[in-house]
Amino acid sequence: MQSETASIQVLTTVDVVVLTLVDGVLSVVLVQRERAPFAGVWALPGGYIHAQEDADAHASAARVLRSKAGIEDAYLEQLATFSGPARDPRGWSVAISYCALIPQQKLPTPRQGLKMVPVAATGQLPFDHGQILQAALARVRSKSQYSSLPVHFFGESFTLPQLQQVYESILGEPLNKVSFRRKMDELGMLEPVPGQMQAGGAHRPAQLHRVRPEFRLQLALSARGL
Amino acid sequence: MQSETASIQVLTTVDVVVLTLVDGVLSVVLVQRERAPFAGVWALPGGYIHAQEDADAHASAARVLRSKAGIEDAYLEQLATFSGPARDPRGWSVAISYCALIPQQKLPTPRQGLKMVPVAATGQLPFDHGQILQAALARVRSKSQYSSLPVHFFGESFTLPQLQQVYESILGEPLNKVSFRRKMDELGMLEPVPGQMQAGGAHRPAQLHRVRPEFRLQLALSARGL
Image 1 (cartoon, rainbow over the protein chains, first blue to last red):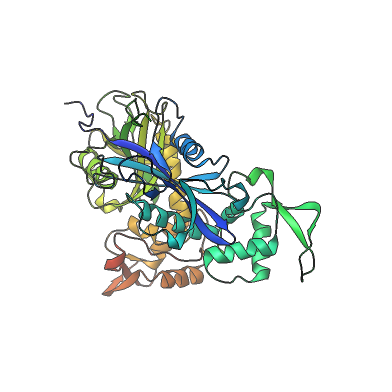
Image 2 (cartoon, rainbow over the protein chains, first blue to last red; image 1 turned 90 degrees about the vertical axis):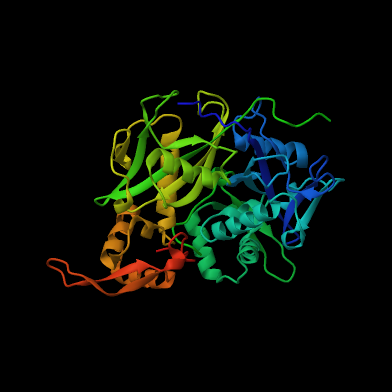
């Protein structure tokens, strides 16, 4: 029997959908491509797997985030793998896509070649990046139903009303306050920040919460949805 | 700036976890590897992406299923992508893994080099196939909470008690009959087979159901779990 090695080389890449809330609006990080194909066009940060240095594709995605968007320490999870002869003009390619969530405070300083755009206003994206973005949005919406995913949009601390507002903006529907708080209790990933209240304008001060250390880089899952 | 092309070639492969119920026991299809590495060892069906003929990695997985296990027309979904320098002794590799569900009636005839093994009894598998199998089992359990996934374990028709039993065996817990039936109604993917009842021993005859044509190769999803 002949060797099974594929005779045409497959390009292996990663693409990362970085989502954040810019003043409450779900937004995605785009970078301007430096070279062909699509030189000068705004796209998701992406790049080749570097087999000589990357421990796995997750490490490739983290490296791409760091080198192309200046982002460190984002919550990062694998989304899906896109593939085929047509998605990249350079040839048959595999793009292992990742979704990253970061708080607005940790966003890189906007600079030439880097911007944050509301997810509904990206316009046409190159390659199949539009499809990858839609997959990320569907994942975040569906996972927010039954997990702690949205806490990764926050920095150090936040109030429960702020967190509820973010869940509502992702899910696109109002949530009942009592059942929302019961769900957060059930997920068990929050703790009050001792002695810290947020003094809030017309409202009475609200307790600030933070994510327990063990849930900072992973999710708390609930068996039943919100 | 230098060309970004990776200097070491990355191997691109697919691996497929084929799950079925053999007399009610959740089982996985294993094939005996014909060549190195791990020649003669039982493993998940897998193989290289053939860029010259495959339309995408999904097509590669379907081709591997057909050529290595004789399985056609299985429900097939992408699971996750495993990667790194250590998982395959041939080099830095990417394995796009898929999960397939087939009814027992559509299983290939057991033959030399092909067997069905209860998922708890596979023993040690080569590569990271043990990890891929565990990912498939976690996916099927979690998706059965809120989707029609388990119907793909059935052939033409089945009764609601049979379907409930399969959900229970996957989820590992008894389900309330009334809420199970309400959930199936809500998913809306079943229809009674006109005039067909199953005459069942000590029980009164039960209506046979089948999956509506539009859900044969895709899932019905429910917003809330079972």
